Amino acid sequence: MENPAAEWKLPWDGGCRCGKVRLRVTLPPLLTMACHCTGCQRMSSSAYSLSMAVPTPGFQILSGEPVVGGLHGASKHMFCGYCMTWMFTRPEGLDSFVNLRPTMLDERGWFVPFIETYTDEKLPWATTPAVHSYATLPEWSAYDGLVLEFAAKGARPR
Ligand SMILES: [Zn+2]
Ligand SMILES: [Zn+2]
Image 1 (cartoon, helix red, strand yellow):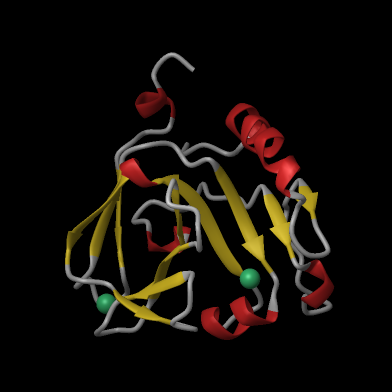
Image 2 (cartoon, rainbow, N blue to C red):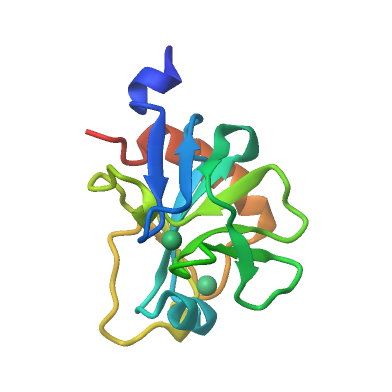
């Protein structure tokens, strides 16, 4: 990867449904995911949530002020305070990346989840093209390998 910004067509801009919160991504994602857990089903109002793990230094809020929603717990589920779009999550104890919902991005047609999690809780018909499926979450020891595999083979913007 000689020039990650060119290979990934960075930067990417995005925003919530109403546009009051706008954001920018300037570093390539580490991994992309779909989560079938019942919590994600409820918060996404859909069959599963979509995430991309963006390195924290590569994630900026350009305008608006996201507010904490969801469980108001140790993992911070961040929403637009006006349109209540679930935009991103700051996961508990993991300051190095932000889990952005990729459907916030203005250009998102290229997005493909590389792994899917909590298939134990999925709706029977809900399928994704993820390369790796997990009944719950991958073992912690698997993440380094998944990040390397995603860097080599994960979908890029076209
Ligand atoms: Zn909004
Ligand atoms: Zn989930």
